[in-house]
Image (tube, rainbow, N blue to C red; front, side, top):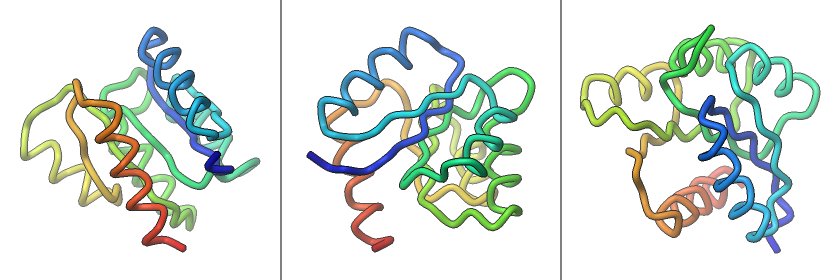
Length: 123
């Protein structure tokens, strides 16, 4: 059991259901948001240990959400989890303040390992 919390930000409800279930199996407390605005509000109310964010969402892109979170002083690890396999977009996400970019589809074991590595570095 990890005892950690994760905020998953994605507008794909099927993916959200799958990932939420798998993180809960690993002992994470999962909060989910379908857009950047609600994610920013959620982080102010209950900051998670880590954020997993899609880059392509309605209302607010992942890059804008990441930049906004960083500008509010949030320093927790942020992982971009995106279907966009474009090095330029990945670099923009990293420049916005995310710690890591993973391309969908990605084995969940790799996702879990990368998140655990980030969390152990931030302790």
